[in-house]
Length: 138
Image (cartoon, rainbow, N blue to C red; front, side, top):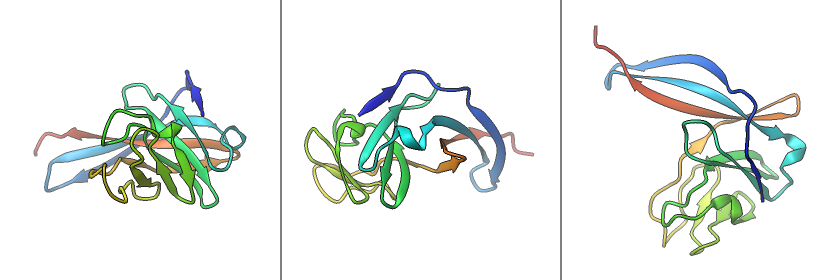
């Protein structure tokens, strides 16, 4: 698995979607992860977006997927795991996560990992990171 130590400048999208019940707004940032050629089928690469947790970007026969890189059972990099179909197996204790939903298939992990939308534009792979922030009530 390869690691990307630095990233191209992130592009921000002003997607201020306000949830009226929680009085929070969300914004998202597109982070460049690499080219489609930089992630082989059945492999992953790890990116370290500024101000966010590390993210693992996977390529399967179904496309590109991005999840938080750290296993929810114990501190291990999922980018170093084994990929089969749309599942990654943690290299530490063999917890498996669905790349589409982040949901573990069973013990030892019981909590899902966060998933991130992936966009492929003209051969470039971008990961969308969503940020929630409180907004002043009117």
